[in-house]
Length: 426
Image (tube, rainbow, N blue to C red; front, side, top):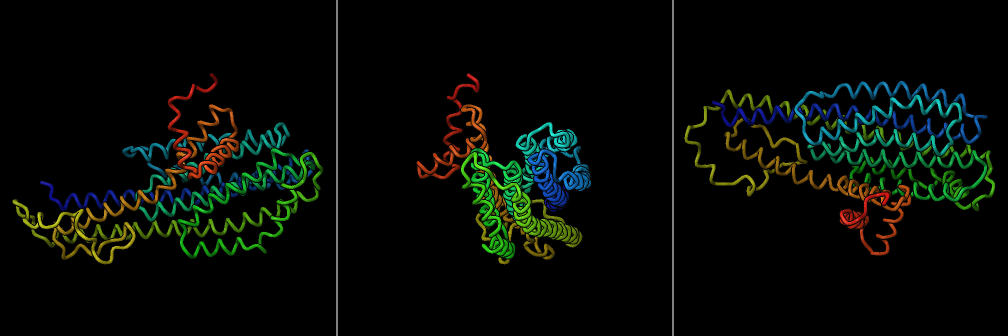
């Protein structure tokens, strides 16, 4: 007959299995970050190549394609490490669906590159295609953050995702500005897109700052110093204040690309530090859980079997009402050695720990929940009002300002109207 201790051991083994999956997830998001960075550079060079009608940046673009192909193989290898035959759950179903979509996007990259090489697509069309592939990869990181059950790891993944998304908006800004300068003429739609991208960066990086540790926040503040961004800000002003239809100096396309690249490289250094912290945290959690499993095995060897009638101590203190033990740190950190504790004490410790983790996890996932709500509301506006993504976001932002409400509150209101809106196209 299985004892309470045997189920505690089974719970710890399940925790270890989940942590091992998180270690794989950490390696995956690290590989995705490297590939996204390379694709961002390829997108910028492709826009310069197309904006110059194929007269410049051809060799640089092809060299970057080769770098991307190497990193793509690393991501595909990381995908293969996941056990698709394990018992399914809701979070893993969404993660695997996102991986499947990302793999389709990666498989379509050769077609995109051929259209760029032959100049069959315009710079905006090619840029939009790169965005679609990159967003498919970032969706994998988003679902990885949403599926992490350890609050500290989830918090780190949330910060990591928002930093990657902010960096992607910075990469889109580089590509959009490169196309404008290379074309030699200001464009009202392109200028508005640049302004939207700058604002989108700030939103994502604010969420990152709220979840990142103090050391990484300081690194980011140093990278954002005005003297580090002076060249970029000067070129931003030229792009955004030149009257629509007026000429732009084509010679500024290279300084613009270089200034944006310097910022993106600084962001890449911080991204690498985030990835290293994530891997270290996953390893720390896994090693701690494995030690606890070993100690539970010692308990099984040292303690006598529980009395058939149980212990009257069970009724003295309910787990949910008990104060958390002294020394309890972030969720997932061990409560202390099980050796010397009774089975009942071990059960209570486990119940308290799981409750503390659940409460903290709800708080950590709040930003992801808000993002999902906003994205769904944007999609609804795009479908029913025939708006672009930028226009839908601008509409919701204006509504929030007019009503003095948070953006997520406006998104909730938009979604609440979904049932009474006519079907798209009617």
